Length: 197
Image (cartoon, rainbow, N blue to C red; front, side, top):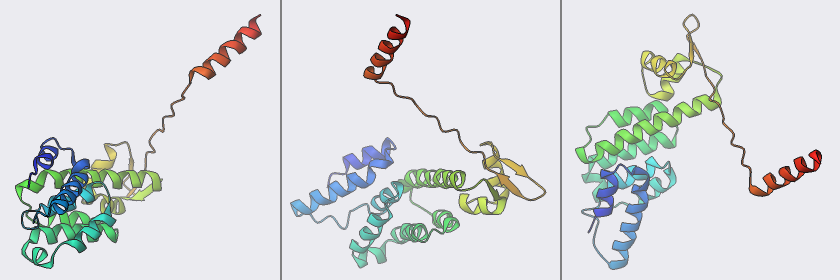
């Protein structure tokens, strides 16, 4: 099989394209009757789904993988453990599953990018859901110890109350662009012209 598109996407860190590329390649292989199962990059394909937050596709993909392959590839089982933690929303467990396995070099870049993306998603969740949160709970969501979590959020403008061990969330400014199309501008011009004359 020709994995050039996949290799290129990984090299250029276009991780959001990985799942689609793998799906296309798998369909192409199936249409051509090519036996691809032994050489298929299951872990990368699986992580591609997780990267774009498509847990359902990851679950169905897991079910489609032959049991002999699951049994012989511990890295695949480890990435499945990440998906299970995502499914049950065990946020700390996601980070533990990521850091609890010695990943091969080929997967590490994608895994680090996923971990960072997941942390940013969790941070945005905290920003949108809380006005105050305990340092312990923030650390749980961000997959850090309390000191790291405190440093992480204070760099982003949150306020720490040491006495109560609470964080005050800094809401992000929501910028609204006002779009002015040419017809509105024309009506405004005519209206101003009418007022002046």
